[in-house]
Picture 1 (cartoon, rainbow, N blue to C red):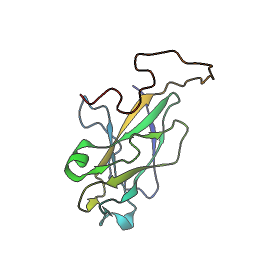
Picture 2: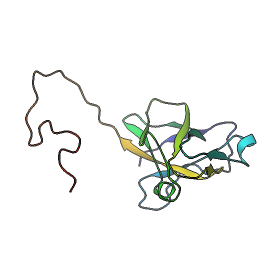
Picture 3: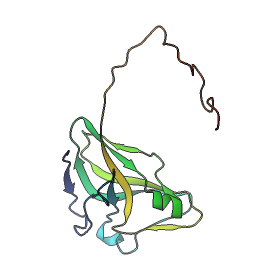
Length: 154
């Protein structure tokens, strides 16, 4: 098991749980909204089409050779149209700043992000670094240069 060190911001509410796995088989640990004290009661209202950076009140030390992938929650997406416009977001192993989650409201009504609410999932995944080399040509494949939609719909 890989250990990720967590630092809670000084203003953050310590009653908001740290990232945790909801079930034994869960790949992602839940990230929760953690608002400054003056915004906890009202939360954050996202109008349809709006996006906002929602604070978690956390900083992470992800080990070298890993990344944190921030992914949306399927229930929020299905019920309320709430997603992540840059999904998955990446938290690099050398980043030590505050972790925030960019949420967007693709739904048709305002959505209130409540203090302590589960807003995203964090998946810790290994990173494979590539060496990029300029080539005079590329090997052929059955697909070739077929791009968007080239393999059909069904």
